[in-house]
Length: 147
Ligand code: DQA
Image 1 (cartoon, helix red, strand yellow):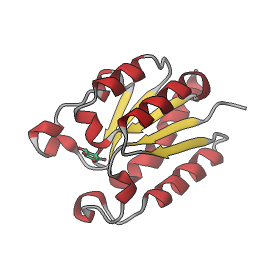
Image 2 (cartoon, helix red, strand yellow):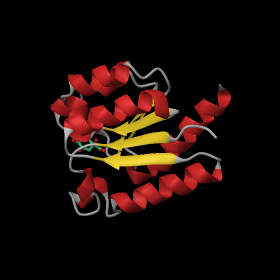
Image 3 (cartoon, protein in one colour):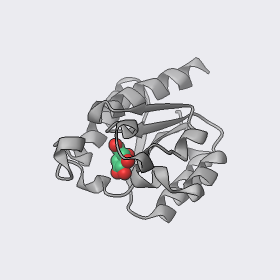
Image 4 (cartoon, helix red, strand yellow):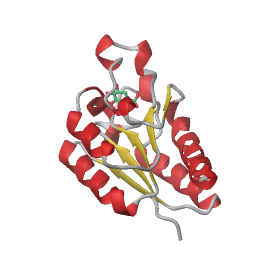
């Protein structure tokens, strides 16, 4: 049995579906989790899906993932643009990392153009709405199966 794919979500994503729906859409994070679970299970993988508004919890999940996850998909939300600690935690994870954003940060305010996650991401997906999540799961599984 392969290790689960860790899917991490940062601050304010617990409000997905209600939060700025013109940018992030009307689907809840629980529905996104279900989409990811179904996509992974169809292909013989499991997921561990988490969200936190607290930086240290995201760091702790990355640490646990070093020994227990096959890959990490991370939407660090606003921590993307600020968090050296999350970057440093991801540097210890030597398996595939996909950076994910629902919106396209490059089309938005200048402060969103910087990503600490990009320094370590194997690849990035942005601007595809919540469809980016199952697409990221598929891309992760393709990478894992190619190994
Ligand atoms: C986001 C983009 C970030 O700039 C923002 O702070 C978020 C969500 C996205 O999914 O589009 O909270 O990561």
